[in-house]
Amino acid sequence: MSALLPPVPADGNIPLHLAIIMDGNGRWAQRRRRPRIIGHRAGARTVNLVVDFCLEKGIRTLSLFAFSSENWGRPQDEVSALMKLFMNALEREVDELHRRGVRLRFIGDRTRFPDAIRERMAAAEAMTAADTRLNLVIAASYGGRQDIVQAARSLAVDIQAGRLRPEDIDESALASRIALSDLPLPDLFIRTGGEYRISNFMLWQLAYTELWFTDALWPEVDNAVLQQALDDYAQRERRFGLTSAQILEKPA
Ligand code: FPP
Image (cartoon, rainbow, N blue to C red; front, side):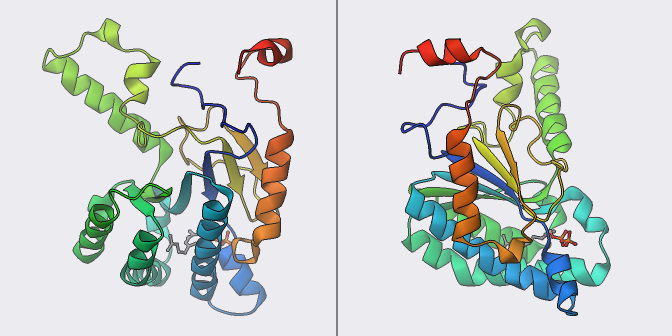
C-alpha cells in the first residue's frame, strides 16, 4: 500500500494515529456562567486524560488541534489567557511526559508565539526527542491550507535551484514536505463539541481518515467517550477507494 495511505494497524482495531479537534471549552464554561478561560483550563485536564488513554491503549501518535491560525483573531484577553495556559502546561507537564516516554512535537507557525513559549517548545522537543511510547503532536498556530502552501513553496524552491524538475512533482513529493510526513497518517479523527467540520485541520493528512463526531464538549470527554470512538472505529471497513471484496482478499 502506498505511503500516502494510512497503514492498517497490526491488530486492525486500534488506531495507530488519533487526531482530535478539542472543541467546546468556551461553551462548557459559559453553561456554568464562568469565563471562557475556565473552560480552557478544564480542557487542559482532558488533554492529560487522553494522553493516559492513548498510553493504555497502545495508540502511538496523538495529534491535538490546540490553536488554529485563525484563533489569533479571538478577543485579546482570551488569546493572552491561552498563551499563559500553554506556557504553564509547558512548564509543568513536560518532565512527566518525558518520564512516561512521550515525545512532544509542535506543528504550525511558531514564529507568531512569544519568544518564551518558542524556547519552551524547542526545549520540550529536545528533551523528549528519543521518547518512543507515544508521539504527542500539538498543532499550534496551525492551518491545514498553510501546511500545503509551505510544502508547495518548498518544492518551488527546489525547482528554482535546479534540484527538482516539475515532472518530479507527484503526491509523494508533496506529501514528503507536509507536516508529520515521517509518521503514519491519522487513522481516526475525533471532533468534540457537536460541530461537523474539519476546520482547516490536517487537510492533506485526513484524506482517508475515519471521522467521528460527538456532542460531548471537550472538558466532558472521559474514557467512556473515547472508548465509544474506538469501538465505532473497530467496526469500520477502510477501503481506501477499493472495493470491499478487494480489501477482504488482500494478504495480511
Ligand atoms: C476550542 O474550544 C478550544 C481551543 C481553541 C483551545 C484548546 C486548548 C486547550 C484544550 C487547552 C490546553 C491545551 C494544551 C495542549 C495544553 P472553543 O473555545 O472553540 O469552544 P467553543 O466552541 O465552545 O467556544
